[in-house]
Image (tube, rainbow, N blue to C red):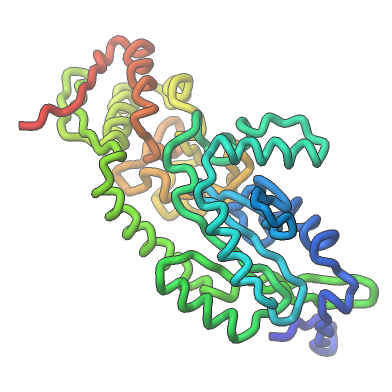
Length: 350
């Protein structure tokens, strides 16, 4: 599709150009600009390393190694060519080489990357802040995604990507089409595969498959708990529901969310102004930023009609991301709110 400039008299087509015609280089221009503006191709990515390579052949390096908000590794391969070359094959090799990366190794790679940029930030802290984790978790790097970014893609690449996605790989193609007006160059950046309308469905399908695998994985903790609070007994609760009921009952008894947030991390409680419906909360939260500067993923919150809290003219939604590592927070709640008489223990199987 062409891009047009609107004038008073007519629509004027903005002439397309190519990256090579504009003298835009892969590493020294595209890569440099995208590492500092990675949200241009995906708003939920964080750059861990640039030119990453731990293998023997030093010429084989990942342009940008990222993570997403689900703690997946993301291999970003860049090309300025008009057909993408053999970037799909390169990216698959890189993904295979890096897919076993641990959280600790990611921190080391990120520390090296930050040092090269002249930044003194603590690598571990920055990664945890992006993921909104308090400490490393076993699910880091469970999946490895591929993002191909090019001026254009050949039919061979698009056919291969469509087929590989059917095999439950996550490979996406993002096209960068430059346009020029005088000395100014504009980039039209769009995901072309999978189509944005189908991307969410594919993500959910992969998640369902992953959850089915996890239910058969003995390493995962699916323990249930019994909760007692204000004399009320709840049984057979997964950890997310355990925390939800504890927070809900504290609020119902007149305790302010701000009091609870002195124990539960603030990022675990989404606050929007006004007494909102679910739809209104979705609209307003889209304008807010997390503590790490990203967007709120409402799939990570309890947002059904009866799950929202309305207090002092504001609406609150609690995170549904709680694991066994957060259980000490529930013990702390019991200390801070002794009148609630909070206690919990693993459900005893009959």
